Length: 112
Length: 112
DNA sequence: TGCTTAAGTACTGTTTTGGAACTTAGTAGA
DNA sequence: TCTACTAAGTTCCAAAACAGTACTTAAGCA
Image (cartoon, rainbow over all chains, first blue to last red; front, side):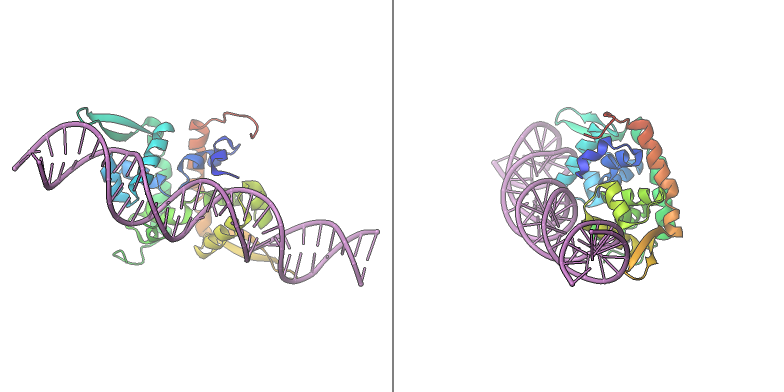
């Protein structure tokens, strides 16, 4: 089954995953919940490549999870902010965080 | 950043995603919570290809989220069952389900 | 004019995934 | 005995996604 076919699955978990279920999307949302809102911030924080980031931001905006808010007109620049729909993912984010805290201790203090 | 480097990230959400954050893993876990436990059941339910399924099951077992329980010795056959660690993902699963129910209505009643 | 910042795009090569067929080990039936 | 069947994977190849780096655009600044 193709990933894209999941958006109309009977199961609400599957439909949610059709938006959030890839490697990077939830990491972007984590950054949003931490208060980040700009392209360069996401790029630096998550370490993902710029072109995947651009793609994921676009999808999240299309899905109505994030919204673009212009903060500069001269060169068009946008903040990416959580919509209400996006805000409601907070409980999910917290359950994932708590599970990670409890079950996945950091093995090495600093990155390899 | 490589996906595999995420397992030692400072952020517990990132560490959780290093295990669950791919396209199919949470779908397997959903099936576990629905009571499925065998390879063929997962394959049919999720529609994923068999070799990705085999890979994900192996990873989940290595991560301690699922455990293999032999139900047949003659040809070695196993049930994949949630460990306690896996059981504790139930709240996360439910928050994702609830979000999907609320925000992602099915557009077509039957699959394409 | 040239340097910097923010936000992307483009190009190229490596990984991962999707789809289908094949394998293995045992069981059941003709 | 030969054949088909079941469960659980494996193997192969082509297609898609990804990582890394360089490039672009549009403005501000020295």
